[in-house]
Length: 217
Image (cartoon, rainbow, N blue to C red; front, side, top):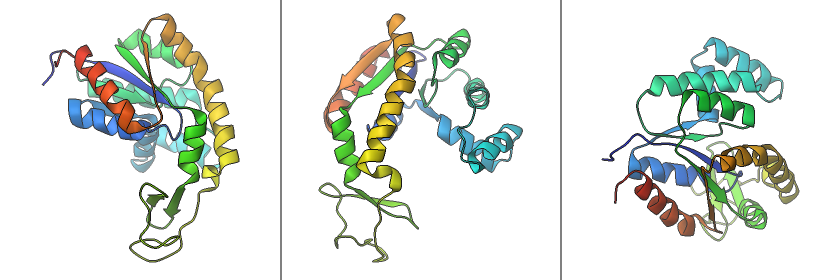
């Protein structure tokens, strides 16, 4: 399908459409999507030693320490072996980027550069049916009856962390966290930023970029 092994990191703020873009990369190019959140959850479900340690932090409302995240991600990358992949949620700091670069050659960093006001507006219109996890976006994917779940008719709610003031704070923290990582990769000339307001305008550019990179056309 493609002519070389290709390894990329995808970076984007919460609400940037990173999940959707990652899914499309997987479907179009057959890359593996290695997401730190998923890997931690899998370790917790399988009750591995790392999973047990991670669960202790999560249960007490703390962030899982870098050391545990690094170990779980490096273990998964090693397991994957000689395949193309995109890393999501790792590295989160320059120390992790150093550890990763000592083991793997990263070919590109895809940075989704979505204005904060667009993300705040996007999540402001997001309502969920908490028991099922169904998500509705007002003006894009509306429920059939306003404020009600399509399947059960139960009321929709908004996540606490989708409220504009919370999202704004989260985006500020994200910039502080990821700024040094982007700078680390920019120094090595690996970052390509994709600016835009919607996934549908960004995806064709990401697709074209990756096709050029993996010699697909």
